[in-house]
Image (tube, rainbow, N blue to C red; front, side):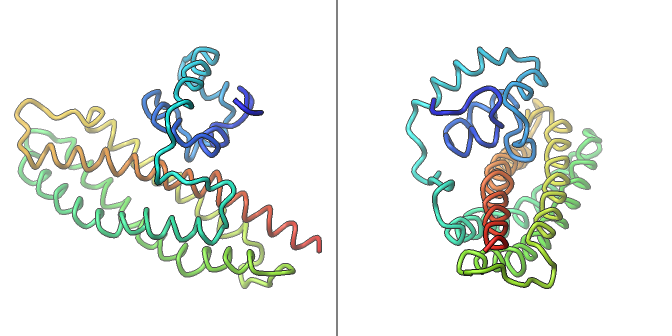
Length: 240
């Protein structure tokens, strides 16, 4: 499988083989916020045999790449910014209000018998309150700067200095979001509904599962592809 090996990072693997994201999801290997970890270390952190995982990856890599995955390692940075806004930001702007209303309803109706739902509700509200201004900062500050870098012939002068500064903040907020998603998965017992769960309860769990999966791809595109490429481009312009 090309030049990648056990010392390549998890993020590099998924960047070159997007279809591996499903396998990593099933193995609970973090390829978004934890995308900078070497594959071997990520496997050992999950008590998995790295060689066995590598064989599974070789099989999974033979499956067709999803049509909407795209080759973002070679696409323009502007195209990747557009994709993130039109795919992941658009999803969050619709889904966060919808899912928030469901979480509130389930916590109100079932909270007496399932006390963990109150913490799910609190965690979701905190996540939403961070993601909404996070997207605003990306769309109004960071992404325009990255698009400007791609059109520049020399390093632009940004009010925030180097592009690495807002990127560092975005990555910090990604870590916060990842912690919140992890917490909600634990609180909901891996999104497993209790026997008496109504349809709204089940819809909440499925919505949280989809939110986590979408966020994993979203953060992967930024942390492991867009941000490193933007930093590398800025460094090359500074050398001109």
